Image (cartoon, rainbow, N blue to C red):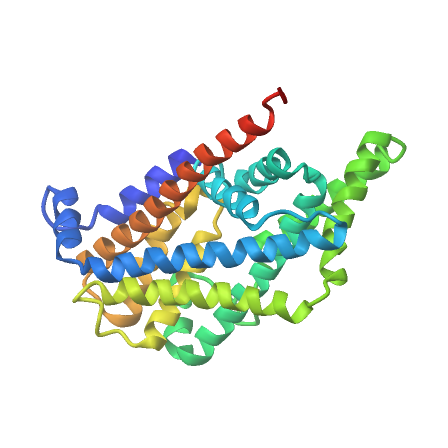
Length: 320
């Protein structure tokens, strides 16, 4: 994964003018409007807070009542781990929550799966809206990438990730059948099932839906703020930002550390092909956007890790 990430980064940056490519990106950073970038960071942490509330909400039907602070700290640590191990943060945040609140990992992991399903549905909604708004441009862009209609023009191919999910499901079923009488495994599976079914036991399902939609609305506003931070990008309207946001969300879903590499290739290609943005400006924008977003995650994750460490250590202190 690291090799692929490095290759994609090289592929993205190789087209920049001149020898000092880092200097070019640095100059673009210096010209950016920092107030818009700070606003983007504030909105990012607001979205994380809403996500923490949503996770806390999903845990309540299983009688696991956690503090919002514990949910937020664990979530931020998960983001930090995801930057190193793709999807590893989903497990690490459940373990951190267990350390803070004694919430069973298998139950909380089940709720994380529900969160991911909700996020996928929201992502699909964003893609649909983006295609409705920018149909001709996005369809032409996908055709250039070789995505979409088959060689005979008869229809769409089945996405590879759907095939992988089905294969994974079959493997899990086989493992479950093989160890169906193992008490420890049954306990884990039952807890996981309890977490999965929590969404059907929510007292306020509409609040859960609102949280999910609002999180992705905030993600869109984050993209808009960063676009406004650059003079070369500020001319793009809401429809263009929506299309770029949809492409970025797809790129971030790739199994690479924090979407690094995939984001730096797909989004500049979209900006260049859809809106005729110069290659240098597109690449510089994407590098700064992704780096700034990553830095906010690292800062929040490291602070959360330190706070969690001392909270867990304090709880383990013997009573005198």
